[in-house]
Image (cartoon, rainbow, N blue to C red; front, side):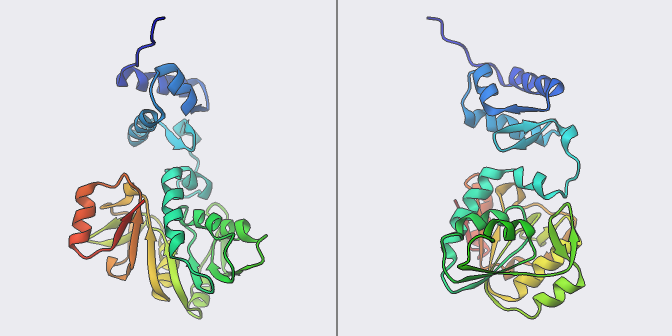
Length: 259
């Protein structure tokens, strides 16, 4: 019986791009079957092609870049590095205790925290995120405080002066926040000022701050800087984080955990 050979990286890339030229999406299964490679190799190939702007990774595969309507869109953001975000939130959930008050910001990473809170008792959640509320609304033992403000439809969250004023009235044991970029030199940054303002308010009003971000955001700076790393109690990232960066953060007394 003749064993099918693994297709080279260059040819795999051509196959994926050509497939997406004719179809809206491609699944990991299609690539593994055609190219005779492991799912791990497929994900690595897709990540490199995404960096080149040739596709957009999703859970279970990729879509053509033309499907990207809005970089700020919440649904789009939750699909990027989804598996890494889920693992980060699984780890972060261990820090939550019953009877605590916690902030959850409206980030696409923090959203996945909701699935690990459903079995907890007497946890009070303060958030501006509609998806978080939607995930937890059927669980009466979770007390939810939705902070009012102006609705941003694409981000599915509430923002504005009213939101910030209301946040100033609350105090939380812990805040779980995200960031568009994190660096030792400039701290936390965001691609949007209004998101940054809400996240900063949550961090300022919490006793402990947990920063949840996938490894692609480490040592990256985005449009708007809003906080130093000194406010962060613990930074939780995924296992793909560069070892040199992790060691550098630890040398600078940043408490960093990898899943």
